[in-house]
Length: 472
Image (cartoon, rainbow, N blue to C red):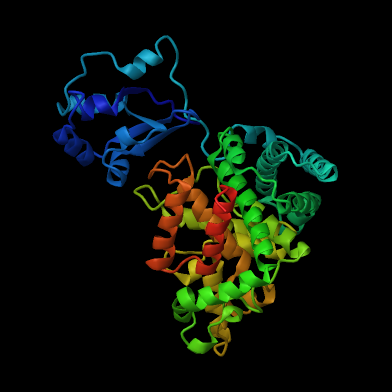
């Protein structure tokens, strides 16, 4: 059950008692006492309790600079400080109390899967399958009408993706304690229906009638932060995959990419494959068999993987960004749980399960995690003569037999996933970045300082973002 917080006093009344200058003594005391802060999102009306130290170290003027959030000390916190004679009582009634006078304090909103999840979770398996079938009918209707109305298409895609995410997550939870064979049998029809639904999504996105700004506005109406993240990542993931397909169909673009590889990125790939001759670091070495278009059947399997990529996310786990409350073991667990659940409890395409397990792999960087590095280690112990010869592969057998360092669709998803995390408007640990800031940061932190994401795919991603914003 969610705790009801009695937030009382804006930070500014304690940190800036004269309304002008910051009281550094109070700052030092609050940092020393590890005081929490009550954070309220102005638009979405979401609530979180965060360590003051975490927010302050990220931005020492966060309570004045952040336009989307309001920050308060709770009554309980202030009472504690006053008992210790650390902070004097505030004479005037707080502004926050005036705003809520005569009414009860609001409860923090459900932060992960949202209130709507309760409705989805209460459905029977047959009702969930029917719901997904109805979604496909809506999508197919848009396809048959060949509509050019971005608003209509985007609304349908956002709302149906959100519900499909919740349906699949709740269905997997329901069979988690069943035997593997029984679980697969129970989810078989739902998996088939989801696959069919995703085929329709792929057709719509490939038409480039996707309104990103509207998508963000619609997604924010959901009060489940994990659902918001999974919805955005899925839709942007398949849109980026469609963008990639359009790019590789252009012969001139591929020629230019070869030049870019030689001029800008060869050393990165040489470091990944140090036992390969420098002269042999060519596009076909980075991408096994080259930058090929993704065929429709494989596109759908990968798109399913994008949809369920965080299906192992527990209801109580927040997205963290490496700050004070980050627990790596908990975050890693969602990858393991998702991978094992999809593999053992469902009949989703194996390609989709590999994506759930490998989408934080980071080219083997210590900051990454996932099943592939463990698989690679065990496989090489059993087959010491085998070592990766390519950076990425489309081929499932090649990744499982360790002929490549990474699975291509997982590297696609890595980039989209990171971008969404750092631009997420719900971000509390640090200020949400705008798209331009995110691109600069990702290039610096995930390529230049330490190679984690793929530099060529990231170059394509920057073009994808510019195109969505109408800058190309």
